[in-house]
Image (cartoon, rainbow, N blue to C red; front, side, top):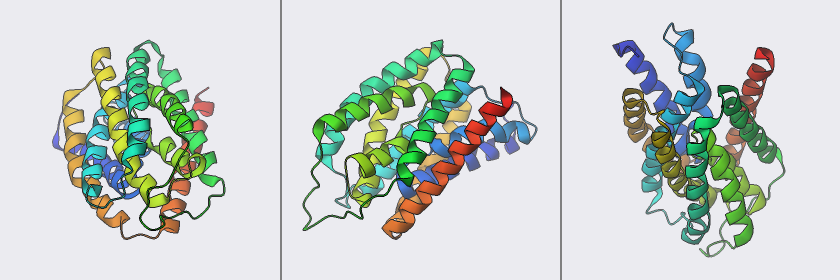
Length: 263
């Protein structure tokens, strides 16, 4: 693709937006970047990325966005180490399998996989949640089998679309595992970093990696994610949950509408 200044700035803006939301709400950024990378370039007169290319670029962007965001939270005491261990290993292995296997999935299949993830996340975010917060600084308990099993499914599906899976992982932490919101946001960044490491490796093995767009998105992530994390620590829990619910629901509706109209 022709790397003119306007094209590079467009990619940087998309990457920054996704990374800012990643740090702000622990969602990895792919919930924003996948549709933006699909629709914005052709709308501005640039060549369109294929769904395979978007998923590969997204995998690299999420890898660095979540790393940057997790580092911003490292001294906060909010990252739940035991939760990260139980979910990080299965989500990494299944993410690697899903991302490599996506080479054999058609373009329409990748879009449908993304739409299913977004729909599941939207439904879970709209479910009633208790306002759980830490008590006396003790780390919250969780069901280890449910954590590992859900991580395996999330990794497989998110590996196909090149996402770290944070936009479905976060609702799982909040609704199924009953993790406090701020702990869920911080821990999801660390878990998603591990997941996206597997996804990035799988996409590279599958031959869909684009160097220049990926590097631009990485640069944007290193700027946007810490900014989002700083803002997120100042927001009220209710605002974070509401913002996530609206964002994920609108994106799910947009992707499904696009799929149905094209068919």
